[in-house]
Image (tube, rainbow over all chains, first blue to last red; front, side):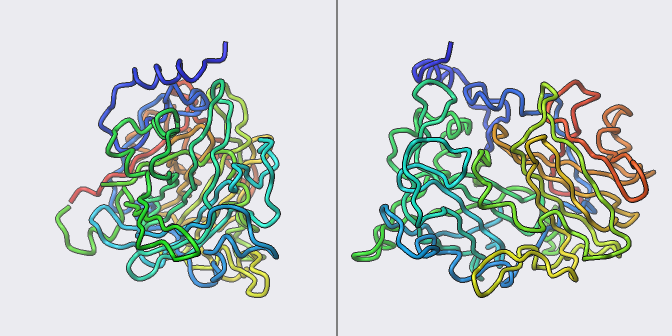
Length: 246
Length: 188
């Protein structure tokens, strides 16, 4: 029998926090994880010559200025609440990750993705594709203009709804710092019921996936401002270069 | 404090894959090799919505890479893809409905004879790192530390000249599940 939200909520409440920052890959309440997580322990690599301590680079040929404004990619304007999302990409030592690629994708204001496998009967918006890119500036800063995505149903359990979120893809200075994640909006009552967000079992780590509303970032008569800083985990070759203790 | 990972989900298709994403080798380079395979889940079923990324040394050992993997048309913003000259070292491909992928690249150098691979998928809450070794390198610390059957999951099998098969099994018994890696700060 397909579980309902109460059953999933009870399953999530029964999972003990493991102290980890990242989700456990096998997280029962997120049903799709069952056959898509390794059972063998990961093998730890500490070799300073690992190729993964370096990583791909991107440049001005890879993005256009328009890519950071998701509301101006079509002839008309998309429906929805105009927002900006900005912040900084930092490494674990707090240093900015500069000149690196940030990619985002999201549902439209009605909660529908421009993807033919999304069959949620909310309307598509001919003026919104929901895809953005930019390079971080010399302070690690990024900024996107978009519309606030809608919540949408999915089939993890009966009456399952994903809270509004924007997908982010980030590169650091090393392939080992690669991160794909999701940014959520503050104050959403669906947070408590979402097995993907709650797969991060540590409460303070989970809070780091939620952007802040910052009134000073709102533009009068135009858009509401959200701020979200991202800290990339994982080692890079620059640790050794900086002469820091290893 | 680090930002947690979340699954790539099922709907990245308009955002992440890009034209010529798997054509890492410069156009017409006679050294070009093909690496291809199938991604499978814990039942052995193909995973039709996985995304794979590749990063490697250039044949001369350089690890600086180069920009331009997603080169754009300044007129309409379309992704033109690589210019066919620079070796960016980076590739990205989604699996097809059969769970298959293929990339064409230049062979990595003998001192790091592998493609670094990152796997993303719906259902996978935190991406996985692995390596496709194009040679069973003597003295490679990672390979040497693995039991024989586990080690075999990291070795791409040569099918014919210039064509290598590298399947990824996300979950399975020890001998079938791909070895996945975790990177820690190097020891001094």
